[in-house]
Image 1 (cartoon, helix red, strand yellow):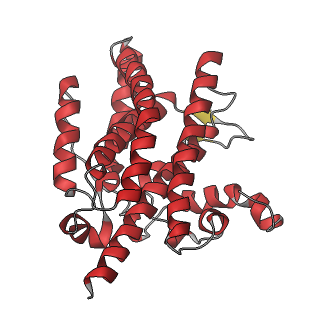
Image 2 (tube, helix red, strand yellow):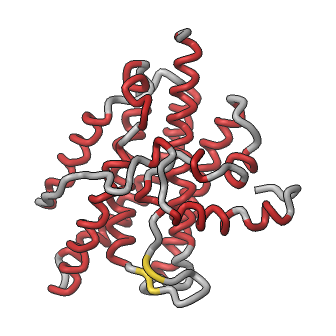
Length: 259
């Protein structure tokens, strides 16, 4: 394969992964609007979710510049099998839906967001050394907001894990669920080795080790898995299709609307 063609293929694949992860987690965060534990958290979580959607928009904008199509199409007119997000971010917050009998799990939400944000930090720190400068510039912008997200979820995590026996039990259960799919966040999919070789990002194993070094401060002993498959290769749960149907409802009814 021509080196320039290979580089472009790997670059676009990586950006899709970054964009789709933030896009789906922003949506899951938005489902907590009005349902968070208290009003201050409602405002803070809404702000974080809005930031995540903004990060996704930056990535999709870069994909548009690279000739992948309009942002509206990339976000609202791709079939689920073309999304490259990790399965962890597409999983629902709990049972029920936002409009009907929502029974969401705050422990799961805290663990997922904390572990994901830390993984995101590790990934973006590596991309700051990337061979593609436009991606570096976007990452530098995102990192400023992400430091706030990191502190927010870390405080929640530490408070709950050291709280009552019930809170600790629920957090441990949530961690076991999150670790079952956390490996997918670090996966680069079928061409991951080439991404690292072309200096777009460091290897999956290097980033996993950095993440675990940080978490071991909390004396957490779990192993990362991809129980339901690798979303980077287009393998997803039915929850993704359901989420995309909701996210694209306005676009599909009014195709001329802008995202």
